[in-house]
Image (spheres, rainbow, N blue to C red):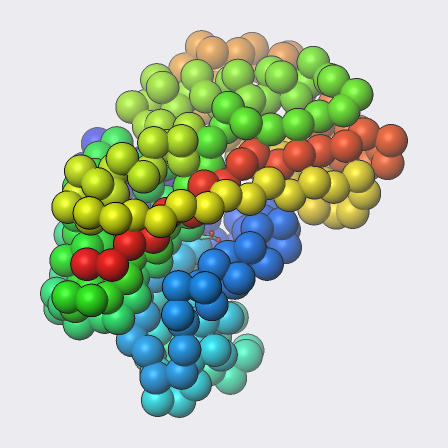
Amino acid sequence: MAHGSEHYILATGGKDAKRLRLLHEVYGPQTEALLHRVGLSPGMRVVEVGCGSGNTACWVAEQIGQDGSVLALDVSPEQIDQARRQAESRNLRNITFQVADAYTPHVPEGAFDLAYCRLVLMHLTRPADALAAMRALVRPGGVVVCEEMDLGCWLCDPPAEAMTRFFALNSALGERRGENFSLGASLHRLFRDAGFTRPEVGANMTLAVRGEQKRLLGMTFAEFAPELVQEGLASQDEVDQVTCSLMALADDETTLFGFPLVVQVWATR
Ligand SMILES: C[S@@+](CC[C@H](N)C(=O)[O-])C[C@H]1O[C@@H](n2cnc3c(N)ncnc32)[C@H](O)[C@@H]1O
């Protein structure tokens, strides 16, 4: 998805909906616990930046009831279309959608009690600018909540070369693109630099030995693999081999996966 010189490396719309469903199964429970912890409650006005296919936004809409409202934003019209369909199928009437860029969302400033994003800032070349825009969306006393990965922190047991390559190639591609796929580790600093004086921190790593969720990594790799080849970071043969091995590891119940660490930071404006 184009934004000036930026384009998002993963798929969007129907092509990405299943992967985002698996991602939500992996990380959703901790997201939900976090949002309750920061005070999500009926009647709140919430904005989500980079909502993808709407999994968290729809859950939030259910939590805040008819007196609350959710505005779900994404730069991709295809993602917004998926998210809207999900809201319709869940019969949600307190949620609206808008194609909008995280840097300049064109949404009334100070209008929200809570601004949230998950795995969005790590895909941007100017995460500080996007965080500043999120900060501007909440009223004084409102809360900003972000969850971002640290791709340097994961587990695979027994160790597997394909997993090591997956993370090395993913990080190399991020670096090449000017994006920081280990942003989670320094997210608290980004908050301080944005003017939040007392950010709070948490983290979660989900472990799995079986289940469809283990396919998340192979599916993610398959989405960004063409760019690895295009950038000369890997050959087509290598990406085919890594994809195949990641899927085999996912289906092997004797292999433990620790999905990349997700760091949670939140703060009051
Ligand atoms: C990894 S997905 C995460 C989706 C969702 N937050 C979730 O956790 O399921 C990243 C999302 O950020 C969106 N995105 C990428 N660049 C963006 C930008 N500049 N402004 C707004 N959204 C953006 C993508 O379209 C995609 O839906």
